[in-house]
Structures are given as C-alpha cells and as structure tokens.
Amino acid sequence: MTVTTAPAFGDTRHFPAEHPRVNYGRIGVLLVNLGTPEATDYWSMRRYLKEFLSDTRVIETNRALWWVILNGIILTVRPGPKGRDYETIWNKERNEGPLKTITRGQSEKLGAMIADRDPRIVVDWAMRYGKPPIAERLDALQKQGCERILIVPMYPQYAAATSATVCDKAFDALKKMRWQPFIRIAPNWHDDPVYIDALATSLEGHLKGLDFEPEVILASYHGVPKSYLMKGDPYHCQCLKTTRLLRDRLGMSEEKLRTTFQSRFGNEEWLQPYTDKTVEALARGGVKRIAVLNPGFTADCLETLEEIGGENAEIFHLHGGEKFAAIPCLNDTDEGMRVIENVVRRELSGWIAA
Ligand SMILES: C=CC1=C(C)c2cc3[nH]c(cc4nc(cc5[nH]c(cc1n2)c(C)c5CCC(=O)O)C(CCC(=O)O)=C4C)c(C)c3C=C
Ligand SMILES: [Fe+2]
Ligand SMILES: [Fe+2]
Image 1: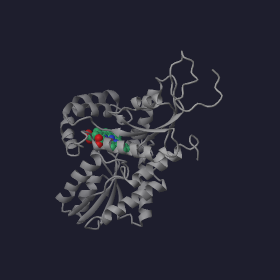
Image 2: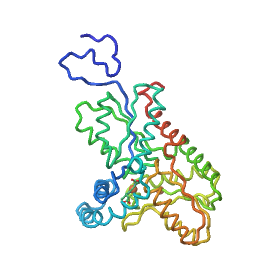
Image 3: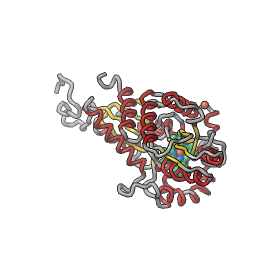
Image 4: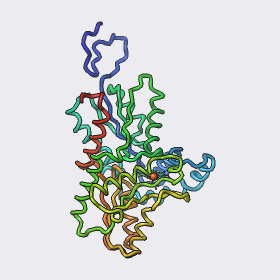
C-alpha cells in the first residue's frame, strides 16, 4: 500500500498485515528524580540503600574497600534508624515517600499544562533508584509511540552524583532497544531567571505567613564530598550562584541569606559550611530566629522534611534558638510548575512548533 499523506500517530493502516504493530509520531517527556524506598521496613530500606550506595557516581571510594564497608557495616546499621526517619514523613494515604507523591503530581500537572501546546506530547516520571525505574518508563513511552524523548533530571544544579547518573541509567536502557528513541537531556537551571523568580516569590510568600522575621536565612543544599568539587564537579559553584542571584533578586545582604550544605555522610570532608554546624553556631551566637530553604530540591523529601524541619530545628532550639521556619520546596505549586514548564518548553524547541 502506498502512503500519500503522513499518518497520524499510532495510525497503522499503511502497515502490511504481516508487519508488527508499532506506534510512532509522539514526543515523550520523562521527569526523573532520585528515588525513595518502597516501604520503611528494614528490608525495603536495605534494598533502596544498596541500589543507591552501589552507584559509582554517588560513591567514588575504591570499589573493593567500599564493598566491604557497604555490605559489612552500612547495610546492617543504617536501614533500621533511617526507616524510622522515613516513618515520620511517610505519606500514609498513598503508602509512599513524599518525593514520589510530589514527582507524580508534577508529571500530571505538566501533562495538563502542555497538552494544549501539542497533543503528541506524553509526560511521564521515573526514579533513578527504586520504582518506577527509568528503563520501564522509557519502554512505556516508546510503546506509546514516542520517537523522541526529553529526559529531565529534576535537579536545578548539576552534579555527577545526580544528573549524570540519570543519563547513565537511561543510556543503559537504550543499549537494549532496537528502535531507539532520539534523546535530549534537559540541562540544569541553577541561574534561570524563572527559577530564581519562583524561589523569591515562594520565599517572600512564606516569610509573610510567619509570626516572626528571621534574622538569618539559610539556603541549604545537599552536600557532596569536597573531593568531587576538586575533581571538577560544577555543583558547588552552581549552588553559590543560585544563592547569589536569589540574594540580588531579594535585595538581601550576604549576612542575611547564606549558603550551607547538608546531609553529610561518612568521614570524608564534604562541602562547607555545614548546615547543622551553622545552625548550632547561630543559636550559640545569640541568633533567635532563622528560616531555612532548600533551593536544590525540586520536591520535599527526607532531607528537607526530616533533616531540616526535624533535626536542624531541634539543634537550633537546643542551643538557645527560639523560632525556626523550614520553607517548603517549590514542589508542584504554581511557581514550581512554572519552572518545570519553562525548562521543558525551551528544551522541546525544534521538536514542537515555536
Ligand atoms: C553518600 C553519598 C551521597 C551523595 C554524594 C549524595 C548526593 C546527593 N543527594 C541528593 C538528593 C537526595 N538525597 C537523598 C537521600 C540520601 N542521600 C544519600 C547519600 C548521598 N547523596 C543517602 C544515603 C540518602 C538516603 C537517606 C539516608 O540514608 O540518609 C534524598 C531524599 C530521598 C527521599 O526518599 O526522600 C534526596 C532528594 C542530591 C541533590 C545530591 C547531590 C547534589
Ligand atoms: Fe543524597
Ligand atoms: Fe565553587
């Protein structure tokens, strides 16, 4: 049969009967965040931590030595207490971590926001560790006819331990595909004016809702070992730039809005100043009121809700601080969605009409 006009997506009328049915003509967008355990019990926590901490992009320590430390100590000692931490933030209604609930929400809202733009676009989401895995969602997008897929690592600042490992995993999956979709990777957006504006609007809104004015505001980012910076990872500089642009946008001084790094792991030196040590020093130094925001996290999770809203609030109060506010992440709020939509629309250019 001769095809005279381009078929609509999924239109298989022109396939000879003996050909397999193949969908085509669609464009996929895959939001990928870090991942979260499936449950808070010891074995679920252990499975999650094992997958996460076996990633050579996350832990760059000598393989043989790390295998002994991971299997001999960490996977025995850490799952129990960390599972109890997850319990405190768990979404009981959906029986999942908040990172998953929020990422799903972002994907659904983005789908609705760009459907009007081009009906060929399909939006989906995946997790680098745990479920749903990247390979499964890439496969599902391809089965729906996505010949082109934009992968969006959900990190405003690039780090090999986060953004690059998403790409590694996606390309591992592509290696097994006969008809590979064409792939684009969305770049990080640490200095995008839409992102800086969203952070500023969100922060101003939350500050207005407080019954106090913070003397100091910490922009706390997830840390990485200092050695990663020395090997050329741009993460540290991108975090500092985000805070600087936010400070400029809000007209705040360097004393008032400061960068810190949290979630230190192991004995190596990580990026400094450390959030917990800064919170303690501020309280000890007589500062009574602080707020902490997490510009590097696109979704609230253990590290923001429990570590900042729980642990660090406790440290502050324990050392004489009085008022502590943990500012929520952008999540799937209007401001947060504006940031994601802006990145996605820009990176789809050339694939969809301007
Ligand atoms: C040990 C090495 C780790 C590096 C390097 C690291 C970098 C890094 N992580 C995030 C974002 C998140 N990390 C989260 C949890 C988490 N991170 C580590 C370790 C490293 N992270 C561990 C072991 C854990 C699990 C909890 C624990 O055992 O302490 C999360 C939260 C996930 C959730 O389910 O809520 C996020 C998000 C970034 C952005 C980053 C480097 C830039
Ligand atoms: Fe982490
Ligand atoms: Fe730097």
